[in-house]
Length: 209
Image (cartoon, rainbow, N blue to C red; front, side, top):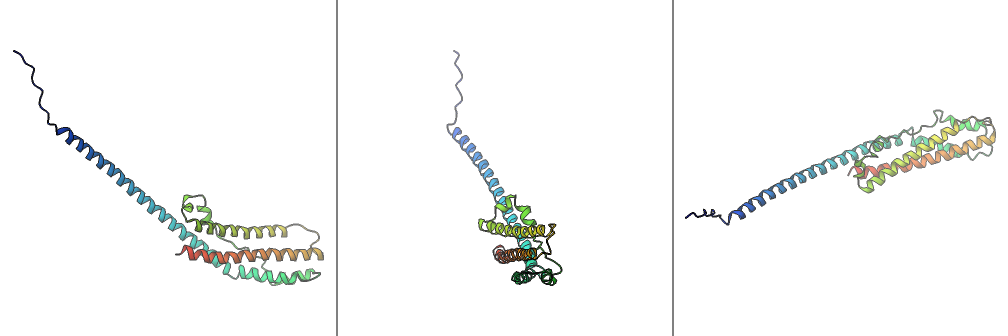
């Protein structure tokens, strides 16, 4: 009579071989992905380190330029000499215009506001690069550029006062006040510039390591 054909026999080891092959392929895929991610992370870390190095180099150049300005004859030494003259003038009991002119005679070119550079700080202040600097370096730079703004502010405020239209400029009371105001203004400027001088030198020691 008719009998159903027997099912073909199946090697019991075949499913295990197939599973091992799939596991091996999956492992290779995962390892390839992890390797690619590691390469990307390493490249990104290298790029970030390079950006930080470039930022430091730019700050060094800018700070060196500002240090040279302060040390130049037109700025800190000049402002110190002006401050000394106005401090001596502030001791005059009832100064006259001749006294004021005598003070200014040595400084007939007027005040030289220090043209501090801050392009690097302004360019990087809203970028991730600045945030990658160590906190101590970031705070150090922030203090420097804030002090520069303070000195600039003293110059601008005093220039606004000098530009005011006054009818009492020849009166002894106004002359005395003018000498006192100028002495105080120059005292602030000199103190700020001296702080910057020390900050610049300290910053260069850190950034050039």
